[in-house]
Length: 276
Image 1 (cartoon, helix red, strand yellow):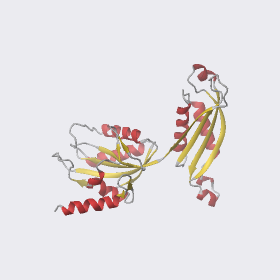
Image 2: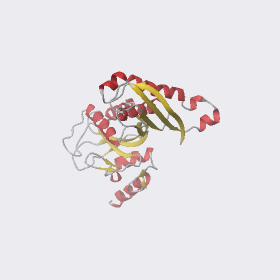
Image 3: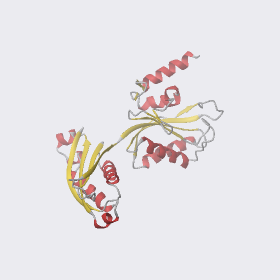
Image 4: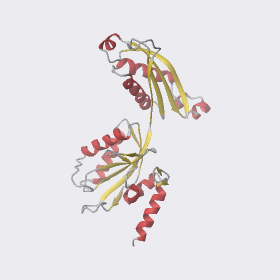
């Protein structure tokens, strides 16, 4: 990926753990690498197809001067997120240096470096209580309304029988492709907030629900702990997941099984047909 570099931008600001740092202030030196595709800018000579590095530098300066944080880690995070949200970049690398750090030792500087970017995630959404279509449309709108998420694709809505053996009404299901700067755990928190806003109650496992939002895939991440499991632990056995997901992302790869969504869908259909 192509890169725009902003190196050693000096800013006077008031970040630090010690109260006097917040009052007196000190110098910070900021560098940022912005990763994006510059083919169009290189061919057309049109600034609108790139990022105005003057505007990017001004944004970094404003973030530094208009806020006060205890940690330069927090400052670097805020700069990175601001750049991602303001400009059409895929990823950023930010270095925050604090050359006047009050450590009472002879050193040139202390610094923090981090990388942040947009991630691709696939979600399953479903409902079988109340106005199911409205619940799904509300979830999509709330995701799109969050500045840290962008809904890129939405499948058709699919009516399916309930999964898990609990007697209940049919579900309306769909899948979404989103771009997000949220970590998998922060994304999970957001999904729970949206579920709760639609009256989701967790009483019976696999029971009826106003809204059910699950993370199916997140880049090529593999996470397996008590809080989160990515890829979704049983997605390859669920037609109500694979059918709409195949509609929007047939060539997405399951990072554990090493198989495309299209192939998983074909395998499940063969398995279901063989039982009849």
